[in-house]
Image (cartoon, rainbow, N blue to C red):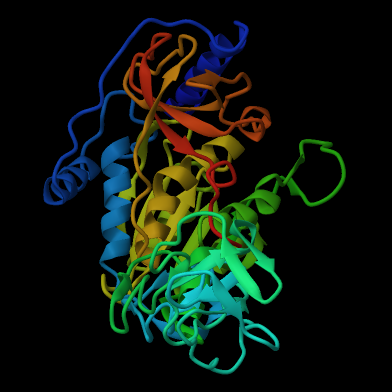
Amino acid sequence: MTPTDAEGALDQSLAGAAGSASTTGSSPGSATPPARATAEQALEEALALVSRSPEGGAGGHRASAWPQAREAAVHAGAGVRPRTHRVPLAEALGEVLAANLDALTDLPSFDTSAMDGWAVAGPGPWSVRAGGGVLAGSDRPEPLADGEAVRIATGARIPADTTAVIRSEHCRESGTQLFADRPVLTGQDIRPRGQECRSGDLLLPAGSLVTPAVLGLAAAAGYDELATRPRPRVEILVLGDELLTAGRPHDGLIRDALSPMLGPWLTRLGAEVIGTRRLGDDPAGAEALFQAVTTSAADVVVTTGGTASGPVDHVHPVLARAGAELLVDGVAVRPGHPMLLARIGDRAEGRHLVGLPGNPLAAVSGLLTLAEPLLRALAGRRRRPRYTATVQDDVPGHPHDTRLVPVMLSGEHAVPLRYNGPAMLRGVAAADALAVVPPHGARAGQDLEILDLPWASGGCFT
């Protein structure tokens, strides 16, 4: 049995232990995550770990610790010179502001009525002005004389010399007179000009995600287009001769589960997926992989499979031939330890390759470990807030590596799910998140870091 086979067997045994109980197996152990290092310390640790082979390393891969691998991905993306463009509001959704959003006008830009009712001047009772009332969008109304009232709609411009607006339900008409049913306070139900902001005020800083609410704010403040950082472009290369694109598995062939999954997943992570291709494991496939890696128009190339050291695993040789720099070459995480991150070209202008393992859940692990932090940094987005949840049951652990286990979030607990082997999708398809399980496992009641799945946490507006 090769080291890779042995580690795969260990992963399967952990999955089997998890499946033997109602939700998970039981294995003692607890650990607390290390204190978060500074960015500089994290980078140094990540670079140092690239040259280390921890216990249980597979196939000669120099595995980085899971937290440091994620830091290396963030650092890689942050080092790329950002692209910017100006787009109409409707095309900016899900992108990141490349410049501060400053108010182009006062908001509101004139005194407006906050309610349907009556604009009144001076103390009551008031004489009702003959004719129609003041509607939203109408021309500037005539000023009110002292003791006069006029009907007014929500959002309409306040006549000059108005004392207050009285809601319709708080007053009554009697002939040509208007009477208030309760005390009237000066300025009530009037939104004064500039109440929300003054022209030139900072509304949102550069780096803010453009959400539907941001689009509304930008429109209200007078914008027709925004300066944003475009989504990182991603090309997906699915490697393997054993993959079917239709029908049931047969004769040693299996369905390609990754092509239908990766494009939508990466889109929800904020990427613009420009294409998905399948390449074989033969020499022609290796040459096609080299051409794709060196000529792709994508900011990030995502490959699946071929990251280990088998006879048809071409990713490492292709990267060496392309002169790429391996930033992460294996990660001490299960599933997904053969994942990698490489830079192609110089740091400021270069592109990146994220190599995902071929097993489906292992590929998901690679997406959340390396692809998500890299894409967020390339897009200029802030890191996701870190949070923990209490795990409901014991979760078995790996002797040396972090485990990522699908969980369902229920109330205040994270419920570990069965079917969490590296080749399985049944567990993650029902999951809300992945729990980060430290080496040696976790006890029921222990707090674990949670990685939300993009559809469970809202993801990008795409």
